[in-house]
Image (tube, rainbow, N blue to C red; front, side):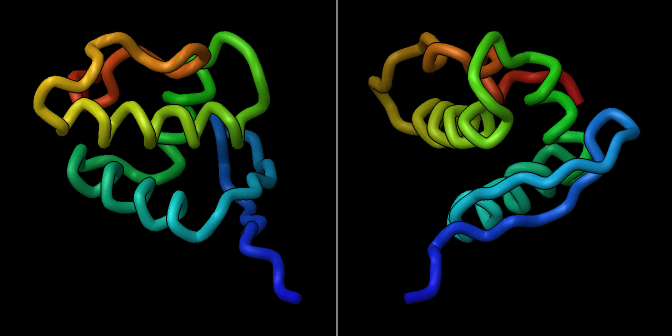
Length: 92
């Protein structure tokens, strides 16, 4: 059985690293980075700098969750623990 998790190499803050995420998260990250007019590497670097705990893959998943949650009317305004504050409001 094929794993739904995809491992990719990416440059984070000038260093090459591997990140394992489900394809849906990779697709979401590409959409988010395009909407913010930045590279995927720059977005992942921003997430890495803003994380408070946990591994990078978890921080990315929380970021994506908070990004889409912020688009839903009435959704909580506070970020999920460990994720950078308000992804949609982050400076470009």
